[in-house]
Length: 256
Image (cartoon, rainbow, N blue to C red; front, top):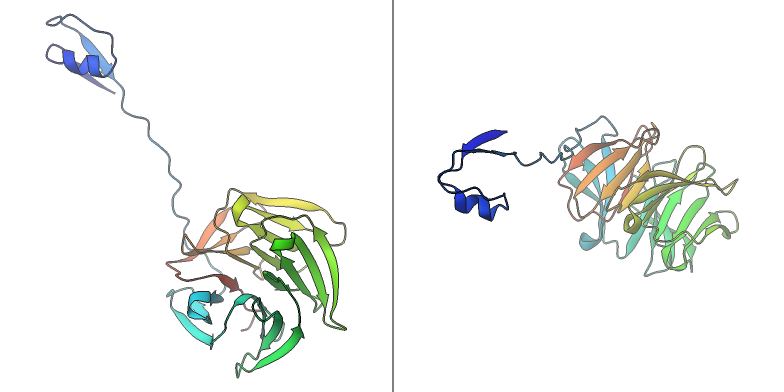
């Protein structure tokens, strides 16, 4: 708070909408400093996995991103329309390709491609489940399905879940869904059918996976960062920043 003499400031008082005072009159006017707007600080870097696989659709590749340096190393190149991917337990990447309507396996050592499923249409999101099945999201149809590798059987799990932009399956089989357009993250229980909101107000959820410690790892394409969301208190901590061209991510299994 500061005090000023208004003898020479009649015009200023009129401009600011302050009650007029006769020129030359001795008076003090109290001007209050503008309120301080609290801005959230950029979350600090936190511990987490050393590497994360990121999809870069514009570059048609999947790269391994070093979180400490922020440097991506291309691992699988020439991938056209690799819409979504996730790690299998053996370290292979399972990739859904929307243009080819297929799901393929990329060998973790050689990079060789093996076709797993053909004719799987409209898959926008894919996640591997602990039981070996795949969970698929089809955003245009507002549905989430389970794909059983034995017999390639598709089983509907949830319908009417709109605006799905990313999904993952955690260690207990719950499905974690990110919805960029609605700025939230949901937890779906495929056994009971219950739906619970994990977090609201998180924008630009482009890619999503679950880390071994239970944290939800979120890639945000427009913000160009990767953050970790703690499900318990919905707190956010940065893992790395300055990530460009990212359209998907997956956290490697422990030991890889």
